[in-house]
Image (cartoon, rainbow, N blue to C red; front, side, top):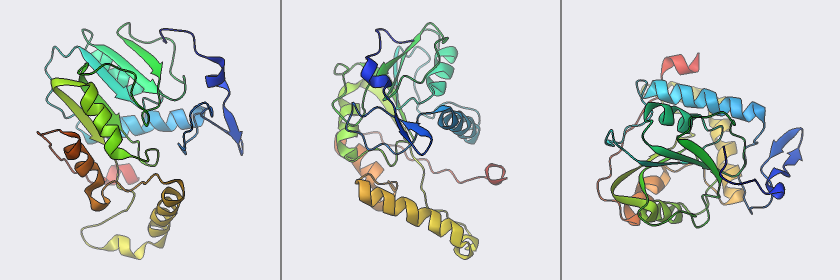
Length: 232
């Protein structure tokens, strides 16, 4: 649910080759569609990432009495909804460029229209936990995004950022003989270069460096490999 009526221009989605994309109200270069097919993909991604974390929604050591939570780039809203169910005393906000989330949600979650690449509309020191996931390819200025996260995070709060490496690697070098995987990465690299929004946050430690430069001190890094069952 949204606290206020959604401006009509937000619903003026662009249609390109049969897929719908976010309204051009925002000068966004976000490359992914916002149609039902994409929302199903978001839900599938949520489920496999939750399984990857041993059926946990997050890794940050947040307290059980967490009060204010923000899910940046919420997509279908599935993470925000699951978190709200698990923490009924928390107030959860999911933000995105499009109002594509369901209407029937837990009473402690609502959704807001916001462009994470602009100045965030929330107050300083407001959230106890900020969840950011899979924004690669949509952000031109990662340091600025994490500066906004730092500003909006309450003292003692946590920010969790989860991004994937588009490159595929293997311990035994077998991926070197798979040209399709290399072509996959090359296309993403070319697309990110043309839009100025990289898909490769691990290059030059962009993700880690941006978080540290924003002012965060207790920075913890977790690397997860693609498991066999994900590839089946």
